[in-house]
Amino acid sequence: MDTAHFSDTSFLVSPLGLVATVAMGILLLLVPRRYTFIPIVMLTCYMPMGQTLMVGSFHFTMLRILLLFGWARVILRSELHPILWNRIDLAILAWILVKFSTYLVLWQTGDALVYALGFVYNALGFYFLFRMLLRSPEDIVQVYKITAVLIVPLAVLMMLEKLSGRNAFAVFGGVLPVTVVREGVLRCSGPFAHPILAGTFGATLLPFFVIVWQKGVARKLIASAGIASALVITLTSGSSGPVLAAVGSIAALCMWPIRNHMKEIRWATGTLLVALQLVMKVPVWFLLARVDVFSGSTGYHRAYLIDRAFANLGDWWLIGTKSTAGWADIDQGLFDVTNQYLVEGANGGLITMLLFIGILVCGFRYVGLSVRKASKNEEPFILLSIWALGAALFAHLVTYISVSYFDQNIINWYLLLAMIATAADKLVLAPALSEATATDHWTDMPRAAFASLKPLTPHRVPWMQASERLHGKFPR
Image (tube, rainbow, N blue to C red):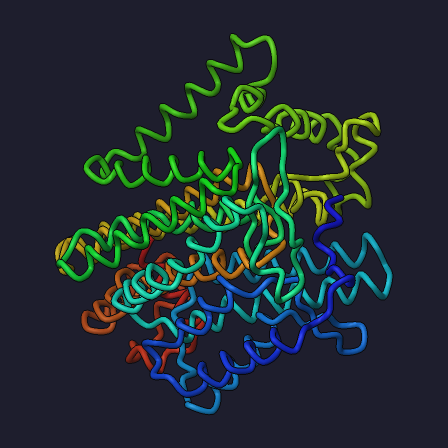
C-alpha cells in the first residue's frame, strides 16, 4: 500500500507558515466572492503540505486550516445556496462513503479512523466549498485568470531550483532543501511532496491558460504568462508523466473541431487497444515501459505494477489490502503504488476503484452535455472554456496512471470537478428545469411517482428532488 497517504509527522508547522496561512484565511473572509480563489490558489501554490498543526491525533495542514476559513466565510456571509444535484455530486458522495467504510473495515484501528476522517474532511469540505463559491461559467473563467497570474512566481522559483539545486520553499519546512537528482536529471519539486506531483500541477492547468489566450489583448498577456509558467513547472519536474499529461491535455483541446465525433473516437481507441492486446506478446499496458521522456523514468515499474495488480485481484478486490508488497518479490518495490486507480483499489477494493472511475466518466459526460446544450445560447469563448475542463480532466486521467495524489494537487482535482458540476448546473440542468416548469411536461418522465407533482420554481425545489426530476428529463 502507498504509505505516503499517511500524514508525515516529521514536520510541524513553522511560525512563518502559520502566519501566512492565517493571513490568507483573513483575506478569504474579506474579499468579494469573485476574488475568493486568490488566497486559495496562493496557499496551494506556495505552502508545502508537510506544514502540519497537530490537534490531538489530528493533522491539520495549512490548507485544512484554510478550509475552516472558507466555510466560515460561506456561513457568515450567507453564501450557502441550493445546488442542482447531478451525477458528479452523487458519484463523489458514494465514493467517499464506500472508501471510508471499506478502509475502516480493512484496518480496524484508531489510526485508520483518524486517516479516514481526514480523507472525508478534505473531500467533502473542499469539493462542496468550491460548489458554494462557483456560480457560473464566468466564475470558472475568473479562476483561470487568477491562477495564470499567481503561478508565475512559482515557475520562477522552480526555475531557480533547477539552476541551483536548492529548494526555496524549504524555508517553510515540509520539503527537502536539496533537489532530488536521478541519473543526472534535477527533479524539482518546489512546495510539492514529489517532483511528479509538481509537474502534474503545471500540466493539468495548461489547457485553462490556452483557452484564456483566445480573447482580448489583456487576456492574451495573462494567458501567455500562465502557459509559460505551466510549461516551466512541468519541465523542471524532470518527470515523464507530467509531460505526457501536458501533451494529452493539448491533444484533447485540439479535438474541439471534431467534438461531435467523440463517440466514434472512443470506439476507435478501444478497438485499437483490443487489437494491440491480441497481437502483442505482453499485455497492452506494457506499452508504458516504452515511454521514457527523461532518463530515469520508471515506465516498466508502472506497467509491472498494473500487471501484478490484475494477477493478485483476489487479494484486494473486496475491501482492499494492507500491503501490496506481496504482489511480487520484495526487490520489485510494489509497496509504492504509483497509480491512483490502483491506490483506490488497494485502499477500498474494486467497488471504490470503479466509483472513482465513475467520477471521471460523469465528468466527461457533463462536459459534453454542457457544450452541446449551450451551443446556441453561449458565446464560443464560454464553450471553449468548458471544453478546457474536459481537456484538464483528460490530463488527470493520464497522470493518474503514473502517480497518486497526496499533496495539494487534491485541491486542483476537487476544484476541477466542482467547475464541471457548476457548468452542468447552469448550462444543462437549470435550463431544463426552467423549461419543465414552464411547459409542465412532467408526464414525459418514466417514473410515474413524479408525474403527479406540480412544477415548482427552481429555488423551491428540494435538492434531491430536483436531481430526480432532471435525470428523468435526460435518459441515462
